[in-house]
Amino acid sequence: MKKVIAFVLGSFVAANLGMTVAHAAADEVRVAFFLEWATPNQEDKVKNSFDTALGVPVKWTNFATGGEMTEAMLSGDIDISYSQGLTPFVNAVNAKAPIKLVDIAVIYGMGGTTCVAAKGIDKGNASTKLDGQKVAVPLGTMADYVFKETMRVVGADISSMKVVDMNPEDGSVAFVNGDVAMACLFGGKSIKAAKEKGAPLLTVKEAQDAGIAGIDITSVTNKFLKENPGMVKTFVEVTHDANARFNAGKSDMNVIAKDAAMDLAGTKNQMDGFEFPDAATMKSKYLNKGGILMTYLSVMGNMFATSENPALSDYSKVVDTSYLP
Image 1 (spheres, rainbow, N blue to C red):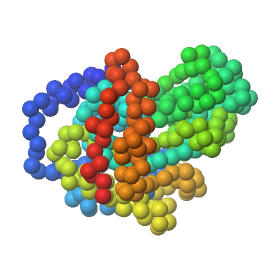
Image 2: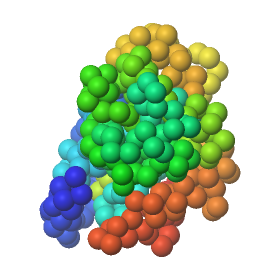
Image 3: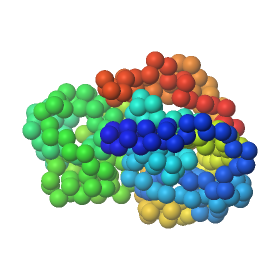
Image 4: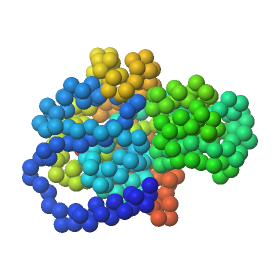
């Protein structure tokens, strides 16, 4: 995936040398999102509230991983990635991808992203039981981060395992079929199917106590930000209005469930573990200097850094809070 990103990134930069800022707004907005990942703004997606507010058609495309979202942004097919994981975002900006973080989409516990192990493997024996075993992990995603952190907590040696790069849906199928001993996943259906054959190595509380948490963000290409700042601001505002409606208990959960390709009970259960903070909380607790998200960016940036794509010295340069309501 890194080679693909590097190739597309080079083409992206070359194609935009000497680019001037357009005066006219875009005639459509192309947004990436996840299925099986229910969020309040999916109600507005279905009811075309985004189209009305932005004044142009909004085209939504679902992706399997945040890394695929990055590739689509770099190739020019996507303008905004909604609920992209912090890990794929960090990998992208470490590789000098021309994108910025403009909003927090969702904060979640390990009910939304977790590692499910086969029967007979638990946190007490994982350090030996996973030796030499195949494990499914969507590399470069938040599930990859959870995998690394979970293995740290249970004392398991990742280098002793055979890590297979699989998106959550495929990883879940492989786990259910017995092809892998553990699968690290996100997505309601994928986790639910895996849990019928095994159990998470850590409970949500155990993961929380160990400092493992997830944050998904909204990222935008620098090109789209430069050419359509008003549209970005409107997109964020509509999303925050949807979050406020959900936090007040006024969302149409049936609409959200259908659009997320999940049943109503599963959607409610998933979203019960999600947080959608308002802009003031984001600015004072997460996106401020020394805030939670800014600290996570630095930690993850170093965790996933390579000699080819080293960590940034200052991640605040790839964060822009000016579009928050």
